[in-house]
Amino acid sequence: MKPQLTLKVWRTPFLSAARQSDEEPLGVGLEAAAELAREDASRLPMVVRALRNPNFRLFWSGNFLSNIGTWMQNVAQGWLVLVITNSAFWLGVVGFAGSIPFLIFTLFGGVIADRVDKRRLLLATQSTMMILAFLLAGLAWFKVITVWEVAVIAFLNGTAMAMNQPSYQALVPRLVRREDLTNAIALNSAQFNMSRILGPSLGGYAMAAFGVAGNFFLNGLSFLAVLWALLRIRYPVEQEHRRESMLTSLHGGFKYVRGRPQMYVLIWMIGVSSLLTMPFLTFIPYFARDQLHTGESGLGWLLACSGAGAVLGAVTVAWQGQIRHRGTVIALCGAGVMAVVIVFCYSHSFALSQFLMFLEGFGMILTISSVNVAMQHLSSDEMRGRVMSIYGTCFLGLPPLGALLAGELSRHIPTPHALAMMSGLAMLMFLGFFAFSRPLRELD
Image (cartoon, rainbow, N blue to C red; front, side, top):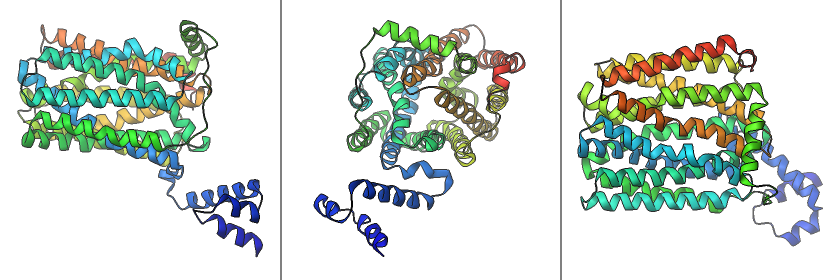
């Protein structure tokens, strides 16, 4: 009966330290608490088992609300650029300005993530993005904004996001048990893509009701959720490491990735996809208005369909727990996404385009989640920040170059031809990687 009594005491949340020490040793109490946590976790569906970790629950929910606001801002920013300039070229320029910081600063963000407390860095970057959102809202509300100001704010926002990304990725393994890491990564993808459904949908209607300034203002408010979550989470204090220079640390990160064939080929594949396929998302406002002849709400629905497919893909990864034959999944799903993008470029049916965006979202998240999980599991804790910064540089830093390339090509050939040609080249390269890379085929 005594073990049952002890267990019952530990269920009481406000047990004092004195009472705890009277009834049982601290070590025994912690073991009992851990056992209770495992019992509670067993009641959760397997698809969301990473949410048994309280810190991850806070982190997940805060980022979910913040990402909804970010997508509301993204859809409004693209529409604002079109209204101001009536130019697909300027869509590419603003996309370039917002994403080029990932190519420049993400690697340094990874080095910093391996040296300092990740929470402090995230608090600084998230606060900066909140201030920029309110600034954009003010300029748009008073109708004094120009396309150059949009581009500058996009660049500053991208810089904060570039410094944010490696710490965000590297913090997740510290918030969950190792056996929950794959599920946590899948749930992070799910919340990001659920925000892709809600954000654009709400953003389209919010623009129609309040104008683009309302979207920017709501995005600024949404950052309060993630800031609150970051202040509440608890995890072991990290020791700061400054044993070597930043350039030496960077070199060590590249050497680490280069010496692991499976990691190396994944970096090449994510780079190809980001440079040649992902830029097409920048031009969705062009397809919505000029090819499908729909308005703001139609644009929101196209992006929401992509988000719905991505959520289904993320839930699939979370449900499976571990995707077998990841190398095959990455290569063939990636090539399938590129084929879908080619068909989308020539679609004049809104219903067909919605379906294609759903397929694109589903295939893309299966590919990206598989790459992310593989990179996290292949990396050591000491190198994780730098590894994920190299991954982030390719994933988020190369699309601006692709957007600029697509924007320039659209000045000489029709925009659908330019994007279809780029995606077709990427598809051939993915199939080539699969055919000639044995480490990729052996990735399980």
